[in-house]
Image (cartoon, rainbow, N blue to C red):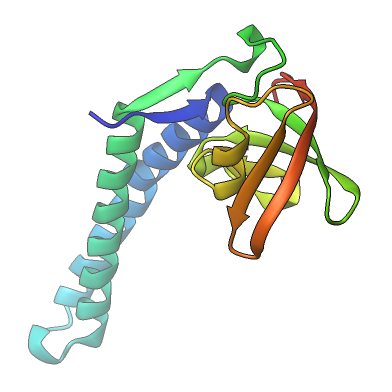
Length: 159
């Protein structure tokens, strides 16, 4: 069984989204379908077909969320420590090419947000950094080319 690593916050966010889809989105689309049916001939009823399509997308998202919540591996970042890069670590790296430091937190794929400096665990950079320790270098193949990074600092701060 595939496990989806995520923080407690990420897990709670998925649960909230699932609850919203089940308690708000699903009943709303059912009402839209009922209203569209009341207009008569379904073969030429654009509102009905649009509502049915929307219902299909909602049901697909519910199934996806149920799988992720059911197979979540919730990791408590507050209990982690050390100098090795693992899930949940906030990593300061030195980009040898640009001669600048970057800070990334390695999170679950559903939690990734580049604006918040959070990268998903299955991203090329996260994969290349996992297992490295402070002082070690990582050569990582990214969509923009091969990059050389040095791990400067590893912290574990819940977000």
